Structures are given as C-alpha cells and as structure tokens.
Image 1 (cartoon, chains in turn blue, red):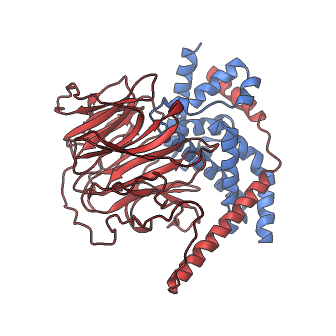
Image 2 (cartoon, one colour):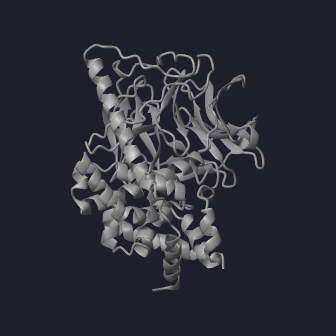
Image 3 (cartoon, chains in turn cyan, purple):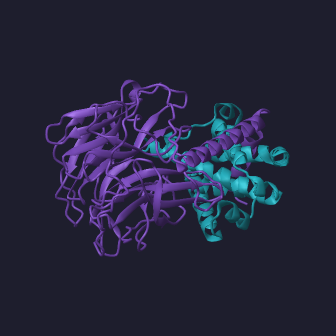
Length: 162
Length: 384
C-alpha cells in the first residue's frame, strides 16, 4: 500500500495540473473539473501505477469520459431547456479574458462534447490526430470528422457574432 | 494556419493559464480512495455473511422503515418473447427539447410525422404508437399544456391535436401505462419552477396523485426523475432518480397504489455494480425499462473508465442485481433512454451527444438509416 501511495503521489505531482486544465477546458467549470480529475486519480489501481505512460493515458481518457458523462447528465436532466443554457462560463475567467477570447470560448461551449474534446486536444494539447484518436478511443476518421465539424460550427458562430 | 485556428489556440492558452491547482487536491484523492476501499470491504463482508446464512440488518437512520418492493418478480419465468415481430411504425422522440412523432419505413429510414418546431416539451406513446400525449411548456410560466396527437397518417400531414388541459407544472418526462388509463409524469413546480415532483394522472377523470421531493435542498441543486417506465401491471413505475450533478445515479421502483411518500423513498438500486470486464471500474444501472408485457425489467449498465461502455441488462427490480446481459449497445454516442414495444421483441435506443442543433436525439441498432448531423438514426429490430 505504501508503494502504491508513493507511485500515486509521483503521478499526481507530475500530471495533476495539466489534467485539471484539460478538464476545465472541456467542461468550463472549475469545481466540476477538480472533482472529475480527483476521481480519475482515485480510480488508478496497482497495475496501472507501475507503468507511468499507461497511467497517464488511463488518466486522460478517464477524465474525458467522466467530463462527457457529467455534461450529459446536466443536459439530459435539463432537456426541456435550451441546450446551451446548461454550461455557464466561469466567473473568474470572464473578468480576465478579452472580448474576442470570450467569444471563442462561448462558441466552443456550444459544441457537442466530442467536438469540444477533439478541438481542445488538437489546439491546446497539440496532439496529433493519431494521439487524439488514442485518447478519445475513436478511429482517426471519427476524430477528423469531429474536428472538422467542430471547426466549421465554431467558424459559423464566430462569423455570425461579428 | 487560419484565423479561427489561431483564435482558438490563443483563447484556450489564455484560459489554461488561469487554472491554478488547489494545494489540497491530493488530500481529496486519498480520501476518495479510502472511501472506495471501505465500500469494497463492506460489500464483501455483507456477501460473505449472506452466504453463510447470517442475516445482516442494516440500520438506516431517519425516516420510517420502507416496505419491501413487490413488483413483478424478475426471477419468475418471463413471458416468452415472440420472434419476427415488426417494430412499431411510429414512435415519439424529443429533438432539441421539442417533442415530435416519427415513423420508420421498412428500411428503417426515419421521417418526421408531426413536429411542432416552436415549442419545448416531451412526448409519450400510447401502446405501440396508436396515439401520443405530448406536453408543451407554457412560455414565461411554470405550466404545461397536455395534448393528444392521433390520426397521424404516413403522408406526414400534421393533424390538429385535440384536448388541451393545463397542468400547473413544467413537465419533463412522461409515460402512459400499458392499460392506457394512467399517465405518469415528472415535472418541475413551485417557486422558480425548482421543485421536482412525480405525478400519476388518471386519464379518464383527470385526478392526480403527487409524490414530492421531500429531501432538504442542497447546494448541488436540482433533483430529477428520469426515464419513466411502467410495469405490465400498470401499477409499478421504474425510473432513474437523479440527484443532480454530484448525487448517486441508479434506479427506483415505485408502487403507485401505495400511500404517497416521496419519489426518492423507494430504495436506490444499481448505484454501483461490478464491471464485468473486471477492470475495477464502477458501473451504474440507469434508464430502466420494462420489456413490453414480459415482466422483465431491463436497464442500461453504464461503465465509465478508460472507455465508456453501455449494455442493456436484465435486472431484479427488488435487489437491483444484474441477472444477465441482453444486448450490447455499440457506438460512441451516449445512451439517453431505452424503450421496448409491447411485444418486448424490439427496442428503441435513444442516444446522441445531445447538443447537435441539426438532428434528433438519435437511435441506433439495426440497419443504418438517415444520418442527421453525423449521428445515425435507426430502429433496433433485434430478437433475443
């Protein structure tokens, strides 16, 4: 158990911040993101802890899956309201971001969960299509499709709000 | 690199820089792991004691003792499911919060039959689509209108709905009992339309019984009752009761003939079930649905870990135990709802990413059909 905990601490120190950032960008809710990332670390078990590369891959995928599940529950619970009412921007970020940055993040919020994940992994985490496919557990074709559709929707929304 | 890509990188990068980790976060991880170990130990202990014939009485603090649920026993031999039964021609669906009637042709293409594009609400089929009840939210109020759609023909002509009783709540889910006499609905009511209730309405007399949410409001906010499904006896009602956002998810079975308490009173089942893949991922049972007239209760086992998998499983309505797998729900889109036709031979699986402005909450299984906005639509005609 002590070895298990030591391994977990090492992984936590190495990756928590980046995983938290990923979750914040996908859910745009700091409290939810913290909850999900802590849950992902808590689910790591002995075998996964022994292999740091494997552990990181596990953590990333689990964070994304939990984010999508949480967003889905919010949306399904509120399906009688407009879908984009469900995600609210973070108060602190709203103060610091420029208007044009805020517009982009507002537009991102309106995308489907998969589209948002694909764009965040490509344009913030700088992953290749193959790496995104591996993280999202999808085919490269599906990643291409989510990315293209997400960018098209983003472009359309930003042009409409100009 | 184009302008939008540049802007996206810039916005994400700036947002990322605003994230500062809480120094106590690691303590949260350790606390969760401790709770997980304690739950595992408790489950093993209880199972061991039960196996050796020792009854374990778990004291539940607060509230009166709950009577046992005596819905149709799942272990009784199920009514045989006929083979080769064609799927119903018409079904109800909610698209972007707006209810509509759809039909499928022999190739599982989906057509909109009656769809009021302007109003939000929900829809419930009577039987296998003989007629439909649909609710529409009354703007700027916490109320709904109930309407009946019938005589929808296959040409796509919309007939004027008849009947228009006003309900003093915003209806979010509905289900008509198999005998066609009762309508169960979940709704938001009260101040700021924030209080959840579950009601059963006699469709002949209009009389209603109400099961409120008697829990103390908490910081996480709303409670919802979702995915209602009547048992063949038109008495028991299965549903997922969702304590929004942070609460547990599983399903409950309510005896609608018993004295009214709270819709959160029946025991929560399926909150945490083992992952059959053995990866240690906790799974939950949601979206319960009675399988036509067979008496079987089916739920969706949702396992979230490194991957997310959905499986329709037969469950014991009293214990919440998984009795057997029924079919795998493949594909990447999330599963919202499961619904069987009256024969139990066909299943409708409603799924989607939920925020696609162009298409349906979508369906899968069976032959591929209309592709709306990248999500496939079809109708499962699977026999088991």
